Amino acid sequence: MPDSKRITEVFPQPSPSSTSLGFKLLSLDMKKWETRVRFEGRQEFTNPAGVIQGGYLVAMMDDTIGMLTGMKAGKRALPSTVDLHTHFLRPVRVGVIEVVARLRNIGRAMVFAEAELFDSRGKEAARCAASLTLNPVNSPAP
Image (cartoon, rainbow, N blue to C red):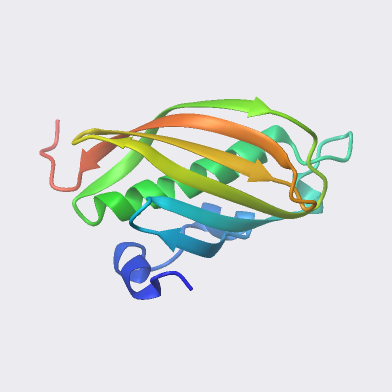
């Protein structure tokens, strides 16, 4: 089970976006900077073709990467996605969706990360690479 005490210190309550996507933390490896999260691919997320609309899949990967980056930053900074490039590999049907994310390069002001999204059959359906900026919590107003 993930280190729930540390997680609740950084994130006292889930964000509304995480809640709406059905975010459930499955694992968190703070040494490897890797996490696995489960989401609910709901019927209301589908497009006219009956598969999960791509924007929801991107949101799931972004949410997972953001949480992991937030864990790295702790209370000193808030991560903000600057760029997220996605490859869609196959359609995703309604059901359980899992995302594995890892931080690849961690700097003082920028973090580079990647994620893979798996459908309910465990097949990789999308992947992304992202860059995030770390915004200091106590930064002066512009």
